[in-house]
Image 1 (cartoon, rainbow, N blue to C red):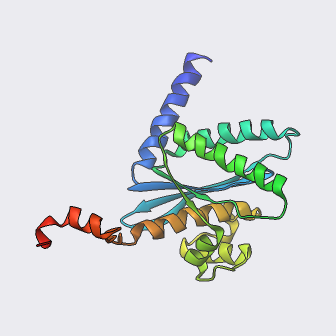
Image 2 (image 1 turned 180 degrees about the vertical axis):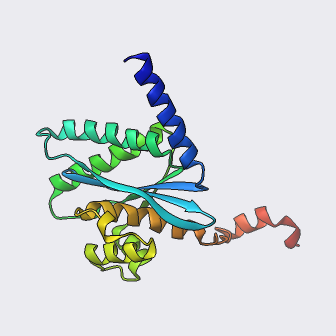
Amino acid sequence: MSDLSAASQAASGRCRNEALREWERIIIGIDPGTNVMGYGILGVRRGKPSMIAMGVIKLNKFDSHYLRLGHIFRRVTGIIEQYLPDEMAIEAPFFGKNVQSMLKLGRAQGVAMAAAISRDVCITEYEPRLIKMAITGNGAASKEQVQEMLRRILDISRESILPELDATDALAAALCHFYESKKPAIARGPKSWKDFIAKNPDRVR
């Protein structure tokens, strides 16, 4: 690499980091897949979420499942380094009848999570039904309904919507995490009478 290209890349990196500083918080959403994996980047400014980017990682060109896993790790790591998210929201695999497909999907999810862990990004898993409920109010909503509701909530132009629904599914996971993290924490009561006494000695006579 020449000195000029290295300097150009460094300047580009500085500009990108400056642009990302305007966000109070950045969330990456991941929709795991073994053929196509979706990702969405959500930025929060003054408590309002906005889409920064979304896309897909296509894996069909790899014949080997293990090559696909390696590509997932490299691409997710690269996306994390590019957008510097604070948190990752990832869709939990749903249980299906095909055990082999479920195993492969679980591995793909795990590799994406490993990429986040390697860059110290906090991870939260969400069930597909919870994500749909958070976005549309219907846990049985279709992917198309989720996409259209996301477009309206985040004011995304139709031209910016990708044909792959995996991308908007990933963005939905990120928005679901934003909504869930805004909910007030519920105080938990004591697990038992012994636990209550230990925590409240002055209230027991």
